[in-house]
Amino acid sequence: MTSQCDQTEILDATPAGISRAGTILRGGGLVAIPTETVYGLAGDARNPAAVSAIFAAKGRPAHNPLIVHVADLDMALALARPDTTARALAQHFWPGALTLVAPLRDGHGLAPAVTAGLNTVALRMPAHPAAQALLAAFGGPVAAPSANPSGQISPTTAAHVMAGLSGRIAAVLDGGACPVGVESTIIGTDDTDRTVVLRAGGISPEMMADVLGYMPVPAQVTSITAPGQLASHYAPRASVRLNARAPEGSEVWIGFGPDCAGADFTLSAKGDLAEAASQLFAILHKADATGRPIAVAPVPEHGLGLAINDRLRRAAAPREI
Ligand code: TXA
Ligand code: MG
Image 1 (cartoon, rainbow, N blue to C red):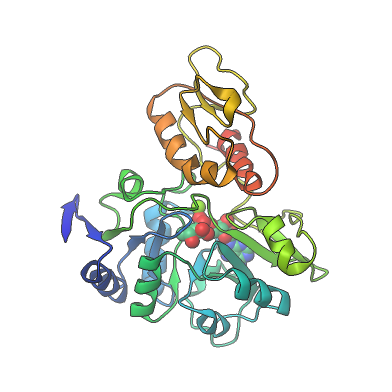
Image 2 (cartoon, helix red, strand yellow):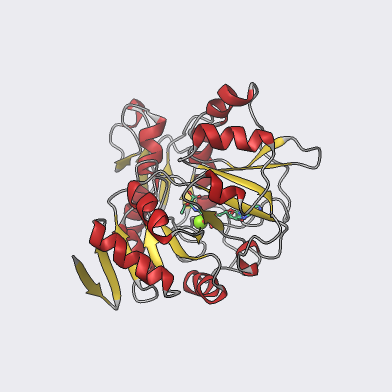
């Protein structure tokens, strides 16, 4: 059922593996867990030592708050007070790739570092069956940022998690490749109480329009509304060139759509955005392993293309260090 690797246990997503993961969480340890979006680095959100260990394992700056994962809407409502619009979105899209930022409720019990001192908390009910089983067995809120060293490419397989965090966390629960492949969409409210998108993700504005009656727009980003959204992120070691219709020099070329025959990798040969999202991080990991500069073909700026282009722009952004 388990194997050891640099003291990080690899657990199968079986009842026995999920039970072991729950035991580790209850003891204040960290377990990387599969979700439908990306792997998360899970710890007990009420335990200050566990939360502090998450920041330490990732090398994450303390000002960047964590997403809290819940088993159901009731658990979310014990922690926060989402407005009626956010509740309607949760009712429609949970379990799934949607995170709500909502005001904290008095007596929430979360470790203060989870929210980095903000008076709001980010909440999500994941759809992956192994994550759901673990949350139900654990019975409390679980803080889980993406299970990668801060600033690096997000993990969509247990092997990606091990490549970044092996030896720094107690275990990884191996639930296979994450089907959505990009992180959740984060929604919040602006200062006129309008619902806005803080981070593009697995639920597109077009999908939310079916519930809202309008397409929510991106927030005007400030350090307070989206603390983790400003820096270079998802950064491969190599440089990344966007909107590349052909490779130049030694570049490894990532294609999208039928016009990219001859690409080294393709996000989706048929130009399907859901397929491209599900492949994005795995292909960035593989392209980076070649050690060559990376060039990426244009991806349309609608639907899941918004999340894909957001991640690509940040992969290509100048590094801060
Ligand atoms: O799909 C996902 O959302 C994955 C899986 C594991 O659930 N998690 C994830 O977590 O992407 P992370 O930590 O990599 O990204 C969380 C983002 C950060 O950009 C953080 O700044 C933002 O959520 N965030 C968390 N709490 C917030 C808050 N109260 N207000 C605004 N942004 C918040
Ligand atoms: Mg992340």
